[in-house]
Length: 599
Ligand SMILES: [Zn+2]
Image (tube, rainbow, N blue to C red; front, side, top):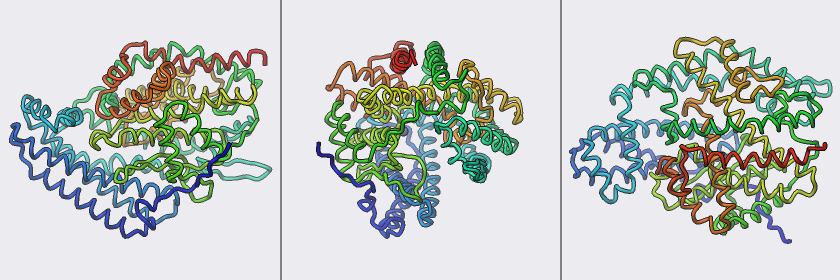
């Protein structure tokens, strides 16, 4: 079979030629600034009439808002690509700082607009958002208005935003600074190396247990050395957040994350309760894995260990072809879209020094194109990552005709299309495995992800819940924080591990992110939500693509409960959907247990 040869280097010149030296980019940033300033001035000069006659001016404001948002997103995404492809691009850093400050101005202006909304009476508001063409935006506009109502006065919120720079976000930045200086010692071939946190972390997926155990010991110690400073950081970050919540009269720390993710608390509770009911099967897997590794119980540092020692290498062209082939079995649109993305060089995959770690997909709205960034070195998980990011790009593609204001989807649904795409490829890989050994390796890889999402993320959620309760009363010491983490891990893993990672609260960046609180449960939600959709797709076959794309188009203009009701005819506050989704993951475990029965 003929395999196409695709470039492994992306094309950024279609947006702006010459990267961070581009004059066109400079001009574009100036235009972006003008758009934002223009919008800001209009918002500040607006005094709502508090009648349906506001409709005219509001339409104008929304047009300006959309224009500025698109430009800012476009410039930000482009500069993000520059920084990722070359971490030493100094010009790109200064452009990035410019975009960040423009973003802050824009956010403040949006805050003022939302505040204007609160001055309009409920009855007038109802009429306003029922008129054309505002009707299309009724969900997002009403959501902004409701959120603004739950906040303090305009002046007080402006003051909070100002104080956040040094009193809140800076704690998150301090964390990054401390982490960048941490070195984890590691000896290999009698040579002592000083590894960065990222390098050390990669050793946890080493097939050699001695290496994993050795790095884990030094890993815990390295974080332990910084525990006091990191505990202080975490306490102040959480303390700031809690003070703001208290002033706004928000009693529940979950209020903000749930509202950001457009979901009900009962949905979250139902999800966790279904997961907890099915933990035994996960424990069976962990026990079997321990047995296969010749251990009584697994330790924390065994969780990412691969099954077996076979290393399969998949060259880029082969990986790309495999993805194309299997996407085609799902739907024509996904297949055609993917082919185009490869041909038009939307993907940066080359394995070379100087690139940023990790992978992402970003959308450049002015050209209606996405760009995918990753480093492809030929591991099977690289193929999954590539499929994953293509899924994100397809989500943007499905939404390309949706007005930009209705494209701002939350994190819990952001992973729908990516997980879906990854599942197509992962299942195909298991099905096409050349022998039982390879099949087990691939199944194990899938199950590890399930364990991470249903146990590890659960531990993070339990930890944050208990940590915030104690932080409300006062400062929590480093030792106490570690105790809370240990308790959360034991509960989430049902006591199935030999050793835990009490300093996980220090080593996990997610606890220090200030943009979004509780940066954990949306992962699990997204994973299971996607699996539920995937299960339906398998039942219904090829014709499902239209339905699937219709769901994707609505991901940013509905509450998740309504989205699921409309497109999947399921009630997320009830157990059925979650049972089915969890069942999909557990089927992999059944297969794994059966295949390894006699080993
Ligand atoms: Zn993703």
